[in-house]
Length: 248
Image (cartoon, rainbow, N blue to C red; front, side, top):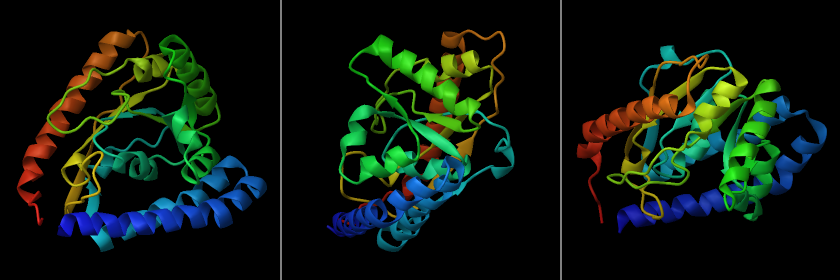
């Protein structure tokens, strides 16, 4: 019951804050500022959300190896266990945009704020078109000096389940002739997908090595990244699962 109540209080603050930003902050930032300046204003909401998550749910997060964060532009691929990573991974690669399905653009308030961050918008109803959209829009963002965050599983995958990784992120990096960076985390331990309940603890984030893509094949590269992400996310989950104690 306590974990559910914590999650409910968090979401009340989440809703109030996103309405505030979409009404009073985002429109003015969008109208008056170019993207890179606008990005830092709009994403200040994420910093608030991190504070609110810690206060209400006792969830914090830390980067295990910050020294491995590349300074150069890149394509970032990460596992997708919850909603947490769609927000908070953006803090480590700024400015950055995320590849998102078009349905998210129609969510009241959230969609408006997300559009202000210039995402790569994908229509997943047509797979071939979705890949073209990812490559075309992704290259445009990279050419503008904006890193691209992609979740190659395509949807949130609960812990213990496996879903094949799509090779779109690897293909984008190869086409753009730019490095690709894998990231693993264990956010699903504390922020389970599709549930209000939240569990206290520290989300661990692990950065892999920036991989160069010259003369690489998309499927081969994607499989290499998938293996690294799975191995490291599993390791992080097993390291920390002792902290996942239900307080219901």
